[in-house]
Image (cartoon, rainbow, N blue to C red; front, side, top):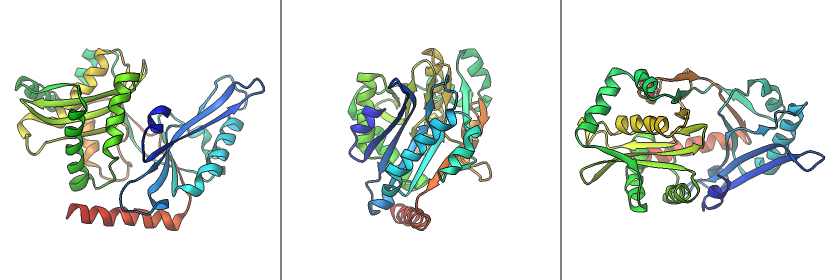
Length: 310
């Protein structure tokens, strides 16, 4: 991931380590400074995201001290150049909430869905009858879902995502380079896989999936031509195929990477819940580095989204 982030024009890896007296890592943290390539000015378009949180060596007697050093250095180095820093937790870090608070971070509820994919039969039994029927109907109609084989397929998929984010999601979408480099790193260094769905000669959907070998497969970006190909259920068949891909390749968990805040209605949550799994709430730690500019940035995104959708 560090090499991948380094390859992107609008991103910069953020890596920190605490070393013990033997110069051996006691804790590490990898994040990414993201600069949106849209119309917002530099500071308002820059944010730091840490996927998964810091990792602290399990034999440390005082992990809180290691975490505090990592957070202190992160804030000192990156708070001035970004309008917020966010930790997207992949595990329960609630025991460290006090340490995070000391450095200006607040824990916000955020749901996620994780599926046990160790057994294919268990996976299939957890999928709702309607989703299972739709996926099988699509496959029987000739839809083929497989890893992207060329950068041209990645570009086709990106066009679907561009339309989806402009008209429906209305949030910033990374540049095409983000997806092209992911494809390259996946083929050369095993970073993950981009699955694409085709019907005949037409690409109708896809999903970007980072893979932590032997641990977890993630749904990062997904999109489909659901309106144009209603009878083929592109988003359903892509999700079904990603989950079965994990089960068939010995990846024990599939992570949907976000189900929204529990107090808000979220249509995507209803869709994803149809595939089974366990709903969890590890939350996200957020540090707003400048509340005024944070508010302006959010307003800016809403305004830009309005004009993009018009």
